[in-house]
Length: 78
Image (cartoon, rainbow, N blue to C red; front, side, top):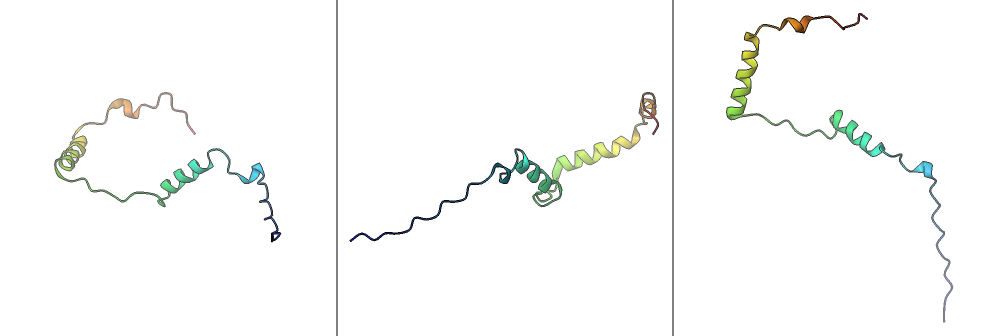
């Protein structure tokens, strides 16, 4: 004997507005990286690389600031 079974109701069709717009996922991931939700942990710099970077940083203070750095030509007043 065959028993009649009610067919499941069809799933409602999703309107195109319900789908995320192109690029939304990328924007959300970039925002999460920027605000720290997906940021990686800090990694220390050790050894010779750290020493050389520190020396370059300290040596930068022994150089005079170039004159062109303070040149205001082409800069508009606000």
